[in-house]
Each structure stands twice: as structure tokens, then as C-alpha cells.
Length: 209
Image 1 (tube, one colour):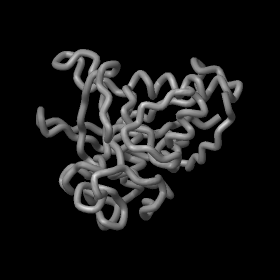
Image 2 (tube, rainbow, N blue to C red; image 1 turned 180 degrees about the vertical axis):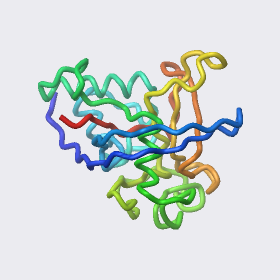
Image 3 (cartoon, rainbow, N blue to C red; image 1 turned 135 degrees about the vertical axis):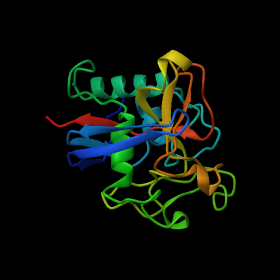
Image 4 (cartoon, helix red, strand yellow; image 1 turned 90 degrees about the vertical axis):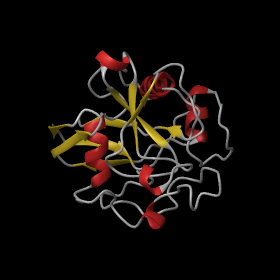
């Protein structure tokens, strides 16, 4: 197992109001300061830690895709272990919560996106049917790249246990989505073990020590 370089941005404390149009509900969440990777986890980073590659689109610096929620959690645990961090402790690598994700995506902005879509995201109109190397588009005001477009990103949360059981949330839109799919507010969900697709990956978070 290799040591890999994950660049983390410091996300300040604050609060975010989330909404679910399906059930016409909104709620406010307080966010503690935390760390979030500046880039989506790449294929090289994923392979260096897990020795597995299942991607549809090849490229060391392209985001990893075709990974389930369980795969993403396993990567976080293996990465923590590779750095001598207790995977079950408070400072191990993890997936962001949905509230952390949207709060970090917005980065203090109020609109549905943090910039002009063609400048910040790979989506159906400009992706040419493939993922692209991370970090080629403009970052948001907090220095996070590809928060919208390229690949969707798994979050840690269960979507609605009563209606969907163990289904987990993913956010952000991907290379095959129309512009309306790449908004800070969009929420999707699927099975945490069985669901893998070529426009779904992840980025990772950590608590401050």
C-alpha cells in the first residue's frame, strides 16, 4: 500500500439549510469546521490504496468511478490505516455528510451554482461523453474543484430509511447530466453496495484534530 497525497481544504464552521422537494421539507444543519479534499479521489489514488480499478474511463488523474458507497467507505478506512490513523476514531478519513457537502459546494454563495456552469463543471454539453482529469475547471471560492459535474459524489447519509431502506445519498451531477442536473441542491440516492455507475465517485473529509 502506498502513501498518497490528499490535498485538504479547511472548511469553516457555519450552517446550511437543506431541502427535499420530493416531500416538501427543509431543515437547517449546523456545520462544525472540517477538512474536505480539494479534488475528487482520482483513479491513481484509489488504485494505490486498494489495488483495484473498475473504471469505465481510463486516466490516472480522472476521478475514480464505478465505485459503490461501500467501496468509498472501504477506501477511507484503508487510507486512514495507511497513515496510522484509527479508522474508527474521530480523525479518520470519511465521506462528507450531505450537509457538509452542500455547505462546502456553495462556499458562501447563494445561487444554484458557485459560478458559470461551463467554467466550473464537466457536464453533458461539454464533456464529450467522458470524465476529465480533476482540477481543470475553476474552483469554488473555498478552493474546491469539480464540486459540480465530472462525477457525482457519495455522501455518508442514509436518504430515507422508511421509504428506501439503506439507500445512500450522492450529490453534484456528472459528465452525462444536463445543466439542470448540476446544481448544489440536487439530491439522488441508491443502494450502498450494489450500485456502481460510470458517473459516480467521491471525495473525502476529515474532522479537525
